[in-house]
Length: 405
Image (cartoon, rainbow, N blue to C red; front, side):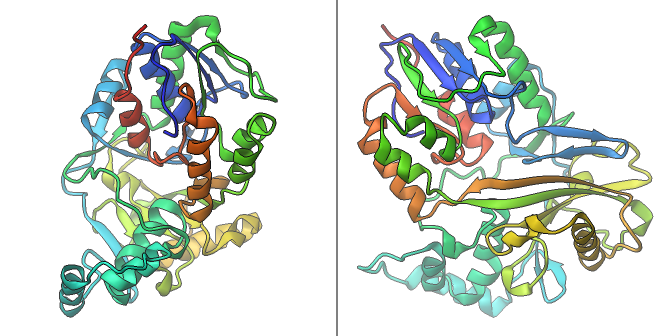
């Protein structure tokens, strides 16, 4: 969140009812603010939705979430049942030398990495990118097979694209969970809850062309380009910075495969692809091997999600449908040992999927703090404001102060 609430003012107007807007509205309503929520589209939820196919469910974006206390409490309040990751399916793999490995580094490479982490001193000249930091403090192999696949899997970009920064609070040790009926069940429950709570103050299908004049707090939960347009007349410098924030382009493909035709049998959460391995996908999530209820007939089919594109291969989004189908099928055959073709492929395309936390976004954030967001009650909030994950968004507003006149 960039900016602070003015807790002396009861009214809050939120522009945008994607996940960030829904979460902000839910918690601020709980904390006795009078919330007005405005969404341009007829339906709320933004990128997060669940598509039902004859073979099972397909997630358009996130497929699971760390089950921290705020997340569990929110889902309990909304009566959204959760399922935990299967006990024997928590392994994470990295592709190296033609096969998925739980430990992608050799013993010598692990030793070298630990030695560098322990002995490399902080330089007077800070690293210009996460890649430079990784090479300096971890070594080339750790950069290639640990940092690179992790960054590509989370942000859809390279370590070269990101600035080194203090990591967010870890969810290590926390169970991974997902709504029983898919991630769309969470956004749908939030939308239904807010419709009941806010009534006519939940205004859907209402595009906003300029920054509205409101009493009280104003929170923009819109993407940077839309926020830039809204702020163009009141804060042109900030608008210019926001308009330059780059995003990773991604395609998410849910592949339903005949179970007997899949050669790779190990369980786990998924496999990430280092760029140096020259695979055509960023990673593959093992949906039905991680959670129950992902396929309609678990005896016949399995479900996997492939992530394609990113900053390393932005042209993927311009491929024809036939070219995409061939690429996906080839990756499934090579990585999972698929014999034959998938039973069904469900695509979700996002030309502006995940913000790149690089120099342009840093400059936009700093400018926001010095200009429009400097005044209490004027806030930017979304996956570009520091809370790239749904968990981070929930925890940010769960901790906000309530209305105190």
